Length: 199
Image (cartoon, rainbow, N blue to C red; front, side):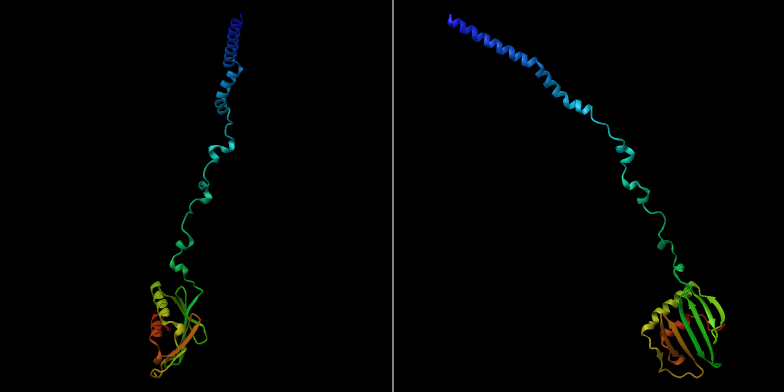
């Protein structure tokens, strides 16, 4: 009898365990697992839409700003012609010639733009004009080649020329003088590039 009761008890226990296992597989826990497996998709489906501040119109690169684009038109240095860089108020050179048969004094003042004025002994204008760009370039080249800072202030030692001229040059803040017989070749080139002293 005890043996049969034991067998019955074991069978009942096994049946209870089996029933419990079935309940666990089909019960609320199983449905909970299923809902958990769907949670990611539900989360993805309910993701917040992008805010208006993240719209396509506000995601453009700052490089599209008109203030940061390439500059339009030539720079001032590109649009300026060489003739505009020559200052008409600049005195390029002033040369005074004294002597000759009549012992007269004439002065030539050439400005940075090539315009020139003749002055008499009283510094009164006696004539005006303007050098061509080629003539002005030749005068500038002669002045640069003369190297005024290294010229003697007064050139002497040459042959005396009776009734000759004496010249005084002022250029670049330097003043040099020479009589006609002692004229350095560099200053002779400057004289050759000047307008005439008389007209």
